[in-house]
View 1 (tube, chains in turn red, cyan):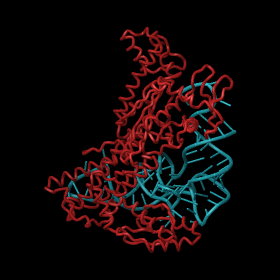
View 2 (cartoon, rainbow, N blue to C red):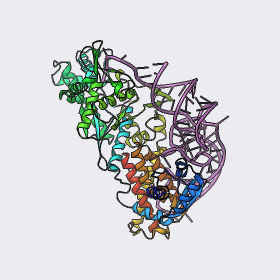
View 3 (spheres, rainbow, N blue to C red):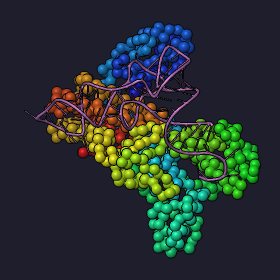
View 4 (tube, rainbow, N blue to C red):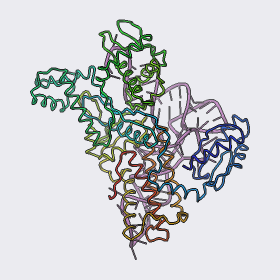
Length: 524
RNA sequence: GCGCCUGUAGCUCAACAGGACAGAGCAGCGGAUUUCUAAUCCGCCGGUUGGGGGUUCGAGUCCCUCCAGGCGCGCCA
């Protein structure tokens, strides 16, 4: 990875010159060399010296075989990579697992996402979380972490009871309770229960039966979406094992009783609020205690880093869960939370409101029927998690040919076709010729983009941000299309070299698409 | 009232650990291929980064404040 080589060399020179250890910020650049750093400005403060002088001193000592020249300009240090340096990097991009990294060193990471209530089908917000979480899991694995995907099923509490009540009402031929579940699937489940002759079993049974059925639907929908969960954890199991009581016992020094309820003094452990109710007046638990127990359980299963993807309605509970973990002696910063904002579906220029409990929501499977798995996954990763996403259905349907996902997939199919064409002409695509013959503007731009792949991957993992991948792939496809348009491949004097460039591109395209769970078609 | 998120070109979004003149796509206008996929490429047009202060050598990015929108807010999960 060229950027790391630049960084490392600059670190060494700074240490030699000033005895300072610093990890400089290295930026890709087009105008000012290939890489630029502002490290002289940073050093200027600690060394109390003129940044221009520092930049010149560092630049004067920066030497590396891959560097063609180094300049100091207005305090910035610009590094120009030699042609040979780029070509060498391109060669490694032809390897099978180019971009694979050992950042994680086998650390065990648990990524929990979707975790939809088992009371109805998945909706489009779940679909966004699924695309995001699944891509994160794939990225973490690619970077040397032992990462697992987990789905938590909240099969306890009021909503669980309500589910059984809603089914019971249907069995009696009545309308569900006011705040009950009203979708067609409730009727469907009720009919199944009737068919099996178990309508006398009672609410608890109905709830359990429905959860089993609904979770199975959810699992199937997610598999269709190419999202696989390693673990399905049920809240009822955690409770059955006595984990909640265990946590209550361990927290007892930080629990007070007031107004007939038990309060956890979460403020002592960094929560915004002084205390939170954990046991209600009626003796039942609020969500908090089981949630702390659940997260404790994650650590107990051996995970070292926990990442939760949550909806914006869960923001407030994070500090109290962290407080709980801290009180139990676990490092709260090892629970990272990524808030994924809502999805607005736009139809006829208007937002479709989603309200799950009213049985009015947009089904994830419906979306997949409309736009397909590839487009859905790609689109959901074109927005940062922290921004609400407007999904314009009319646009997605009408202009599906202009979807960025097609643009990227088209590049993949196009390259595949070129390589097949070359083979049909009796050319061995494995023979890369003399790569140093690649010198044209479009060739060099494409090479530089290809070898950026490992940097993008590692940035994506470090920032926990898979949305960098689609943007990178669109760029890469764009550079390839431009190269293709300007230069003949098969039949040109440099056909071998250009075919190798094609192979490097398709290699990275394929891997990038795989990491975000989008297919790489051979023909379009 | 408090907390979190968002506000960048007509539209949808970028801007990689504050960096060197804010970039793409779409829309609009004009071009390109007798040869490997035109779902492609090239060019033009388009901006006081919601307003105002501050920190800094440097701010779309950090801090304060105001405006607009979204979400949440002690015994629902």
